[in-house]
Amino acid sequence: MTTDEQFGPVMMFGLGGIMVEVLKDVAFRLVPLTQRDADQMLTDIKAAPILDGVRGGEPVDRAALTKTILGVSKLVEAHPEIRELDLNPVFAYPDGAVAVDARIVVAEA
Image 1: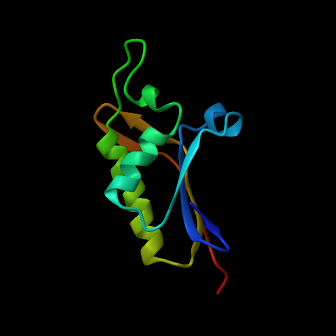
Image 2: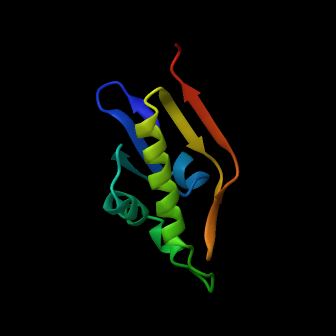
């Protein structure tokens, strides 16, 4: 999540790594997000089929990912002093998702 000067808090979702850095395969939504927004962010990226399982891999728990996305949206909405929030990496499994590291930048008082 980052804060745009004109639009306010903006959420970004992508699979990370080269998918984001090189291919710019990301989805954006303005905070606050709805359930539909979070669900669509997962399907809007070109790499969405990877989330459904490819080459024999199991699909990830989309509900856990959307819960994480909505949780960040609610946190940012409740705390407007948050200017940036980055969860990286987030590991998505068939039965859950875990944010391993978080970085939060707040506005100066």
